[in-house]
Length: 248
Image (cartoon, rainbow, N blue to C red; front, side, top):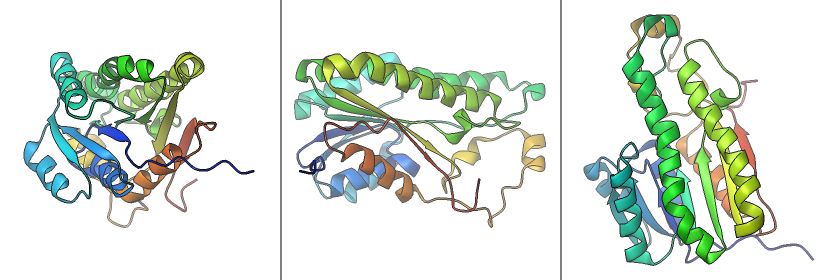
């Protein structure tokens, strides 16, 4: 007898970085699957716009993942409102690509602060409730750059490699004892505004970011997240790497 896919109806999800890009697409996908969604992010105006497009109950959670107290308050608000968090999607991220020789220290540190420490802060806050309910699914949005490093992507790639390795360790520690599933999603080029973070003028001159570049849509990544979440309880989708068709 085939295992039935997980029914996400009635599940509660907290999605960071939900004010746009991949995060908002994931929030919309989960809401369409009858999840209750907490939209977490810094831009309240954009979060309100996303909320208006959702089909089910949702709340807005002002959250800067670089601030520990702010993250803790956001999870407290979500748990107070909904009583549980079944799904955490760590989608908040920055991508200020730079050449190391050009010494963009502040951007390097921000990349680690948001992409790595921000993920850790959210995992730290969600674990007590998931451990208590002996169930949960944590999805970390990493990147193909965490597996295939490119010039100009040293710090960003290192941050995403850390997220991939963290996800592997989380599965090892949390799945057997607490039935917490963990998935790392590793997209290639996606049609978002992340590249607007780049200030390294030499890198921008060298790289071809033209409009004819093959890209995936944010909905493609949301579909991958939904695929991982909707598998039976007996299945953990460990990692999913996605690239635009035509890219090796």
